[in-house]
Image (cartoon, rainbow, N blue to C red):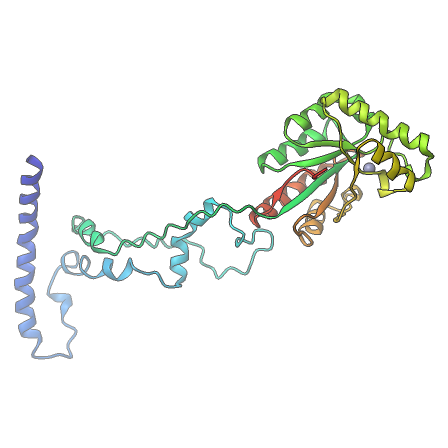
Length: 321
Ligand SMILES: [Zn+2]
């Protein structure tokens, strides 16, 4: 009750100046009609009373055209779900819509009460973009020559931040040296795979030699992770009939790669990242290294690659073997 009576007195208070304004306007209109050419209004009323409420909000709010100002209006919505249309890696020549001017219509002085009423008359556009959950294309990131006590945990940390999963082609010697890191890899949802025991060129070995390299690594992985590896990547991508035969007998699926950014040569993080991003395509297998040397550039490049390719809608999964 108190509320409604307050509202009534409120509207009376509002009505009085409105009527006064109307009176003045009628008076003014009758005089102004006689000379159409004269820009009349400025003298007729106080700026806070007659300029704002009826004109500005109506004209400014509905701006749903492809006006740059409207772009400033929408980003917060799209910005929450990284869309494939946001080119972060190759920043497009932005038209300079840098969002300093606030597009919100300025509050019209003393007539703050009119705003909600006028706003409620609006068609209520509220462009709610439906957040379409994209299944997205897949990229297979792989890391060879680990596990390494420095670089593997850093790789794992970056992968986790992007909810990305990868396959680690480990050396049996390193798994025996750092079994807890191999276990961490598996615990984080990634796959630990076989990359031989000593990084030998398997194609140059006889059957016994190949078996030794692969079986010892299988054992190391099994005891560290309680999982049996099912993927093999022969060092140097060097395959022979014997390698394939032994791999088959051990239930190992041989995988090489599609994209080799040569991160091991340390050409610079951006170069590594660029070499991956520029050729990225669905189901590509990317060769990287978390062992065998200083891999700080690989870690840095990984961050760039994941940010960009995630924004393009890619997912990162373990190899299907
Ligand atoms: Zn290797």
